[in-house]
Length: 302
Image: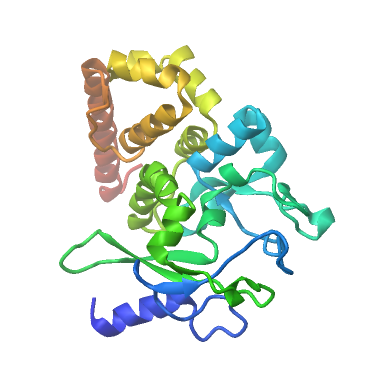
């Protein structure tokens, strides 16, 4: 990828030349400085908490549903809507805004956010946005992260004198913790994106992906109450960790999806030898059947 192509990709990520865009066309690095402060009493307080397009990450869902004392099923039904994520074709959960209240977030009040200490990672980053640029030369497959400012017209926080660097803001907002927790999920998204939009995910794989990334209770039941453990070899220490710990189960889910959907290798979960042999034989049988059919077609027969 040449320099001009890289600059073009950056401009697209920063949405340059789009009139009315709140995204400032300046690329920020981790040590870049900006001024911002939001607090109760500022004239625009909570104005940004409406009409947002927030895709909830797996860790977001665990934190919020635990904070509310809800099961995943009930939380997803009350507060989210499933949708397909862009060109990846992967199912995700989007936080529902209250249309009857002018698109307000369901957790915001005049006094602020009801779930502030457990708010989603996208809220933690605001007013900083994060983008990535895939390296296609020397470090093929790697993602270079960079940042930008989201500056909405109504926001008075930028007039405050408090200074931050991108890194100090991330640390203050605990964004690093959330990034670490969601890294496995993002890697799955990037892996699927690398296959291209034309590679469609089968319905069953979509169901597995959505369950393992949004609904820990249902995923745990799937592991311990189905034939799952007859199919996979999993260390006893891992089974003990995921039995009652949603975060450990979430991390295990990332490994499982890499194996089950993308055919990756894992030290955490492996197909039992007999199941692997059976799967290989089925694949070979299907290939031979398809080859015979193609040969018949070439000879003018069906």
